[in-house]
Image (cartoon, rainbow, N blue to C red; front, top):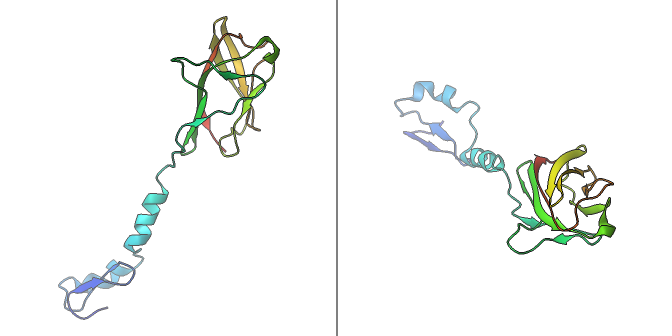
Amino acid sequence: MPNGPGGLDAQGVWQYGEADSRALASDLFNIGQASISTRFAAVVASIPVDSGTIPFPMINGWTNYGGDRIPATYRRFGKHVTLVGVVKGTASTAGGIVGTLPAGFRPSAVIIFPVWSNAGASSGELHPDGTLRQPASGWATPWTSFALTFFAV
C-alpha cells in the first residue's frame, strides 16, 4: 500500500494509500482488481469482428445476374454469416454446385433454404463443406435469388 493518498500501480489498478481517507477499506478494494488494460482488452475482444462484404466465388458457369441486381456476396459479423445474391446459369448448370464458402464461413449442418427465380419458388442447399448446391431439378436459368443468414462454425 503506497504512502500518501494512493494512486495507480504499474498495471493501472488504483491502490489506496495510508493517508487516504478510504484506507480502512483499501485491502478490500484492491483484492481481485484487474488492470485497466486487462479490462479494455476484454471489452475489445467481445466486439464482433466484421469481415466486410466478400464476393461469392462461383463455378460451373454460374455468374452474377448483373445490372441493378445484388451480386452474390457473403459477410461474417461475429458468428453470423449472410449469403445473398441474384445469379444466373445455363441449362448445363442444373443440379450442380454453384460455389463454395471458405472455412470460417460455413454452417455446421446442411441448410435447406428457399430461393426465388423467374420460374417461381424452389430451394437450395448449403453444406458444411461450404458448397452451395441447387436441387437436381435445377434452378431457372435466367435468374435465381437467394438470401440466408446462419451461424458459422
